[in-house]
Every structure is written in C-alpha cells, then in structure tokens.
Amino acid sequence: MIKLYWSPRSRSFSTLWLMEESNLPYERVLTDISTGAQKAPDYLKINPMGKVPALSDGEAALGEAAAICAYIADRYPETKLAPAVTDPRRARYLQWLFFSPGCIEPAIIQIFTKIEIPTSTAAWGSATQVFDVLEAALAKGPWILGEEFSAADITIGSGLNFAVRLFKMVPSRPAFDAYLARCIARPAFQRAEKIAAG
Image (tube, rainbow, N blue to C red; front, side, top):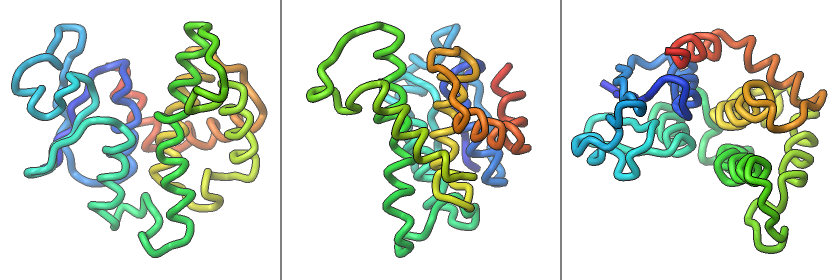
C-alpha cells in the first residue's frame, strides 16, 4: 500500500492532489508538523529532511513533492500523469514538473523576503522573469503541455494556487486566473483541498 505522509495546511497539498488524481489506493498518514511529528526517528528514516510530504511504496521511500509526482507518474503509468519516456513531449513535461520547486518557490521567497539577488546568479533569474515565462506558457492552454493534463500541472497549479490564490504574493494575471479556474474545477483538486484543510 502506498503511504502518503502529510500535514494539514502545508506543502503536502500537491501530493494529496496527485494521489487523488491518480485513482490509486493509498493511505494518508497524518504527520502533524505542529507537534513536531516530522522529527520523529521513524519519520526521519523516510525523509531525512524532516519535512512533509513524504511517500513510501513498499521498499521505496522519498520526500520532495515534485519527486513524489515524478515517482508516481512513472511507477504507475496507468495513471496517465506523464508522457512516456519515448514521447517527445517528455522533455517539456520534465522541465515544467520541476519548474515549481526550481523557479516558482524561490521566486516566492524572493518576493516575500524582498532580497535583491542579481539575475545572473539566481538560478531562477528573477521573480518577474519566472512569472512572465509561466504566463506565456499557460496562455496556450488548457494545460501546461496543451490538451493533456499531467503531473506537471499538479506542481505548477499548486505553486500558483499558493502564490496567487491563497496568499496573494504574486499579482493575478488573466492566464493565471483561467488556469487556476481549470485546476480548481477538477474533482481531485477539490477533494485534496478538503483533505488539506484538516
């Protein structure tokens, strides 16, 4: 049985959404970060960073939301959450799958902390560049790869949901609003949001 270790109102949302989209049977294991449960020795064996989310699947165990998305999509191809390895769209899929942790999240931190980092040294360039590039990609729609929803939409949609909709750290743009509306309309998103609320 797949076990998803999560905590309410946390970065676990993307993996809750992933598992709800997958239609795979899974067990949710509450790891309440408000009590420090993520620092327990047994949990640290699953995710040495002591963060949520984490996932175990038989002998496999991993942390990091985008890695969990990649793992589930590849390990269970019947979910149809990723293009096949031989599909040319796979390259763009991987780029966008990791765009959220590699670009959106650092850009949000830059906005929140107001730290000025030269674009030549910041791996994500700048917050403005991140959201301009994302806006251009999403304007084509309906999903990041076009007509087909994928795990990359889960990481991108979760990042935008956090940045634009929930915490209003990033100004809304028409392409973001339309994309988020499509994400929110998905039954799996709605189920995940209800679970994540605790």
